[in-house]
Amino acid sequence: MLNLKKLDTEQINENTKEIDLFETIDILKAINNEDKTVAYTIENILSDIEKAVESAYFCLKNGGRLIYIGAGTSGRLGVLDASECPPTYGVSTDFIQGIIAGGDNALRNAMEGAEDSEEMGEKDLKAINLSSKDCVLGLAASGRTPYVYGALKYAKKIGAKTISLACSKNAYISTVSDNPIEAVVGAEVVTGSTRMKAGTAQKMILNMISTSCMIKLGKVYGNLMIDVRPTNLKLIERARNILMEVTNCSYEMANTYLALSENNVKVAIVMITLNLSKEDATLLLNKNNENISLSIKNFKENN
Image 1 (cartoon, rainbow, N blue to C red):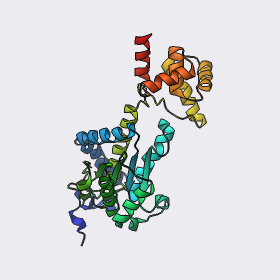
Image 2 (image 1 turned 90 degrees about the vertical axis):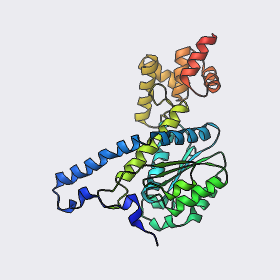
Image 3 (image 1 turned 180 degrees about the vertical axis):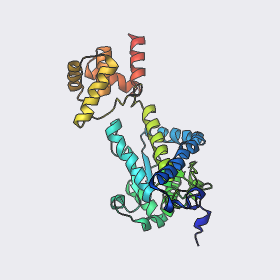
Image 4 (image 1 turned 60 degrees about the vertical axis):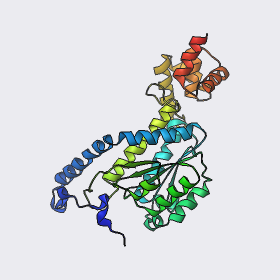
């Protein structure tokens, strides 16, 4: 029999035992006060997150993928983070993927029973042809979700790198993970409602992992998103502004080079900065792991 009382995510919060009697402003203060503790919890486990980033980066750099897998709120957060990477960093939709127990229908409709099968976790990874080149990040606030445990166990079995992210100490999923992360944020404002502090912690950590990987992969120049895909009016304008900011060119020149580079901001920056053709700028970037700073530095040193 599962003893929920032993899980950190199921503890009673002494600060909110009478929250149903609070005035609205006091409810908000109580939630806010609990949320303030999340960042400090994460600060204490940055070394564990660092190891996870290095593991994921190694796989992405060497032709693998980063796969988030979870159930319920955890699964939804994984899908969210993965789905935001293509428009932000210009990566393919399979570069970072999110898988949720119960499939896409579970994004909008509760299918919590889908989390109870280890076999389904393995099956869903087999469906995307998981290989030893890939990295699997299993998400479970409770740290014991069978679906996630089964997925991580299978990933480890075939030689893929594994990361686990739980919000309970001594998590069951940590036992099948190369890089366990345990963000123990404590009792929720509403007992067991892990979409709150636990969800916030998971969202923050996923942001940290994916963003750090993208920076290390050369998809950020300074602190600008230079691999952004200009697929709508806002992003097209952002691309122009990035070019103008980085190269000090005019609005008209930014338009011209966006067209010449086929809307590749990174290539356009190198073209303008070094007065190169699209072909030569692309070749230079390829030689320098798509890193603009290295490309410019090495070109100037050799010319």
